[in-house]
Length: 369
Image 1 (cartoon, rainbow, N blue to C red):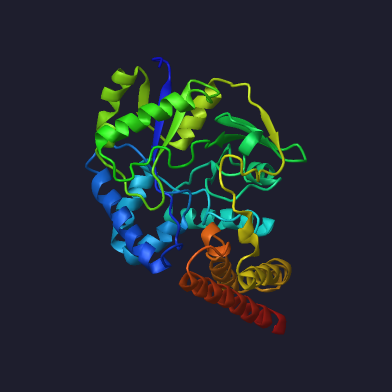
Image 2: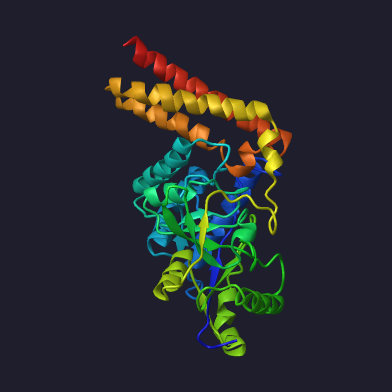
């Protein structure tokens, strides 16, 4: 294959807070996952990195139940063994407002500052049903150095990286997960089967690579890591005649940029389902939730936040942040789309209603003063 090829294995999990099971059922699995990370990462030096799906809400979900594990978890994040962020939740790009997209980032920033840690500086958007025409502008404006996307690119580009460009000219280097975010998941397979899967991925992705770097995403929905997998990377490197690294998305992007690749430009909206299902019909399911989400966004963006400058009470700002969090927790892609259990949508409906109630009560208090 070529000894100068560098294969970056990024071990991760994709975490839907609610989907085919409810939030609390999935949270129990999340507790078990992060418990295993806290227990094993300190003992297994060869397992260098785990990516916690680009969300920080999972830290709140975990620490609410495991406050005694906070110090160890924070230490592992500071050491670079676990990466988090850049978002509070992974949103749907078409069913939320631009303001909510940005607020999602700012709430994440506040969560991480309170914990005293830093987040990943890449716009990780691995499972949205397409990407809007101004996503590059938003990511660039937030100071992110790159993007990672999957669905919707379709025929626009079949390379592993391209320059994503908004209609106004803003552009950002974009990692294109053409073999999606689970191309190196173990799916319960044995180590020997993983070796064969990795070999096939290297061969396939080499046909699309823009540099000598190959990215394999070792994880999938709610998957736990194989902590001993990275022990085999040196052996497989010799057998494949490549350099296999237990890596991170930021390290991968840095190594790609060092080679200064000549990248294709991809301009505008990305909703082509040629190679990946985009499921556009979710925009018309459970309309009552979409309407409630829209109303809550309007309340916070156009009324409550402008009026909040009249309040001198710090408590009011805390209440507004609490309401925003309820709203944002209703905007993950499987929560707002309407493609989950009825039980999930009863929870989403309640959260959105509570968000409205919080916002209206704070606004009435500000207005009465």
